[in-house]
Length: 242
Image (cartoon, rainbow, N blue to C red):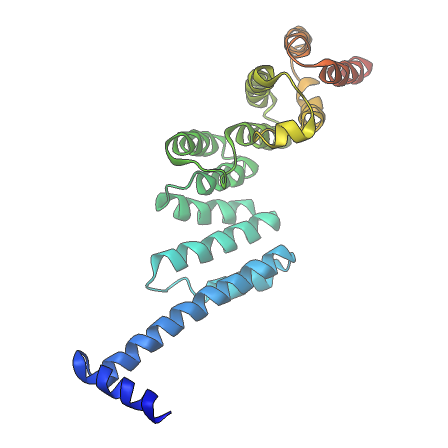
């Protein structure tokens, strides 16, 4: 113990006063505590305790560390979104995306704006998310095919069937490149499961010109494997039966 005391005594006398050293240590400790606190807020979010998650994150909105502030806002925005408070989550994600080059942040703005029926903003945010993914996207980010598929579903949910159909056609291009519709194969390549894509498309296709639908489904069927063809046929039967 005496050796440790002497060691720190010598260190203090080298370059900075004891008080300044202590302040530095305290600041580092505070930063660690803040990160841990945000981890706790994330855990609350995962448990779907959204109000508590928001409360935990709000404490750090005035922090001098920009990264901590942005992380806190992400937690708040996602919690508001899960509570279906889309106008509020849209505002939060606008603030986050303005300071971010992460495509996921821009896609969060896309989904919030879509479900808030702010379609013009959602389209701008979606295009920015795609642009950023092409520039610096990683495997940690939502893939471009998944962005198209989720955006398609969001547009469907607010009755924008024609716009959703544009993304349906884009998804046909993606699946045509791979041909194989096995779920594991697609998952490993950042593609939505084929069955889920078809299920989420049913309502869209029921609200589109039947001739256009027939043409696109024939195109899709001719581009995928036998299992995929069977799945498309099942979807065709559901649409024709309605």
